[in-house]
Length: 451
Image (cartoon, rainbow, N blue to C red; front, side, top):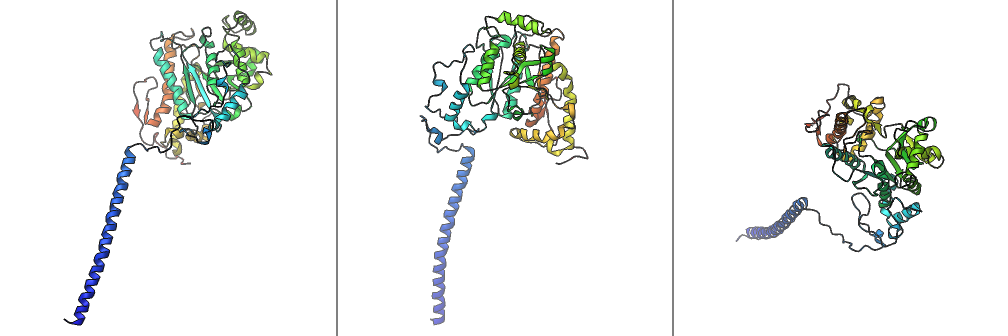
């Protein structure tokens, strides 16, 4: 055999063996890589369609130092452990009853927060909205339906703005009925929610009609109570209608505990209940009935003990903290059109977005609302004089006016919610039908702005 050929063949065989070796190695590598990739893909699909497993340890018996091992909720607070350190809840003398005063509430609340530090962040803006209705079914045929929708309205508002809601349909004190029923509930809510800075009472017949608006809490930083009212009507006119006590905000503090106690003791639990009615009637000449009521009682306290009560209260009149429905029901249509006109001009305002970021779009809208003046949505519409459950109403208007007004207000508010879900009530008096919202609704104008 030719040596050159032999050398070529042996060299070729060596290269072939070498190439075969690396080829097998390469094939093995590709096989394992493909297998690994397949495993990753299978795991990815499995993870997508099944809940993510929780590999964190479960604490069934949290100790007093559990704050060092927080298990946070989606709200950034630790909802699971309740340390063994004693708090006011362990005091056998502590009572939720409206007839038993609470002392050193500021200290007790501070101590509780010390043992639950995850609640400290954001505590200054934490609100619990409290509302309620009667224990029995309504006499008015549409009463229970209206109450359900009125409650849904409050739940919708709180979902957007991060408030907690407590709905009560029981009398927590047998004597405290009608407008006095709220005081045992408010006190109990203060004790049940030491994590909250504010307790916000809203009557069942009041509803939010600006779902975007957020309370300007910074404005109230030096006050302990906020209520809609007019100082000149209290001190110059001594009018029974100088404020409305159906919606009020109180700070969760000792001052408010004392106020609730004093205020309540002008009601049916007082031995001087009839006497208080006479005193109020003599002071407020426009008061039409003889019984002591919550509104007259508050005005009396603000008038008689100005330094103690008025100086710590904020009478809000810059926006509709609560507005009389008769004055507001006719403006909804025009207000809606003004808002749509604003959105036609500004692309950012009509952009579709997740409900959770609604507050950001409310902030965008504020700069343009200055141009609309009086056409800003009323924050809360209060159906004073209409009793949806009993069917009773002020004789100045008939019942149908009340109930139709409520439906219109509810649908006006509901449209602000439904739009985030792609639908609207086209007729504010028709609750049963909705229409789908087209993309880029409302249609833009030629001279629109994108800022």
